Length: 220
Image 1 (tube, rainbow, N blue to C red):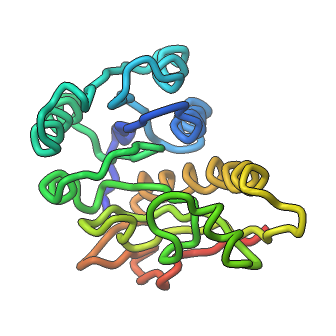
Image 2 (image 1 turned 90 degrees about the horizontal axis):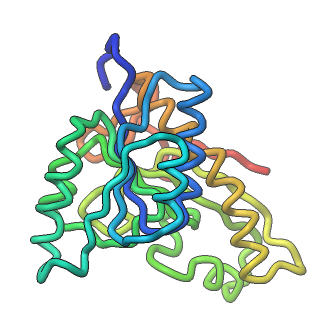
């Protein structure tokens, strides 16, 4: 469990696009809904809307363009340097569309969170809304989890579960899931900053108790 500290928790958020989840977390910090500050937003793509949004909130931003590096390993080394300049307590992946190396994941083990638009362990990877519809699932949702070396495979923390409606298409389902993302990601971050959430021996713990495989679930 993270030790309580006098200073607010320092958060670095990694993005690749619009940064809507970044914005939800940053605004929660600004409203003092958690004892934390987003000290930097780093994008692997230049010119994305998320960078503009962060700058509007007076958050320091940086671009580490993955296309400027010849290997994934070289990119990750430079990304680590950029992150570590800010001495973060927590690193958050918020629509960060890069597969990270094992060395990167191990460096931030236990303080690296991701959000994935499915009810993990179902539908790891891409096109989750389409896959849920094609499978005629009755429910869908989104998961916040600790990051492990397995793609979308770390222990689950919290899930938001929504019904799939008869008239849902990929776009409508994505929109309804995204609304839930903006609710549960700040919740998980707040738990971490309160010291209530931790990863021990590959499992997620909340208030010193192991979480179930799916994590805590919110149903709408």
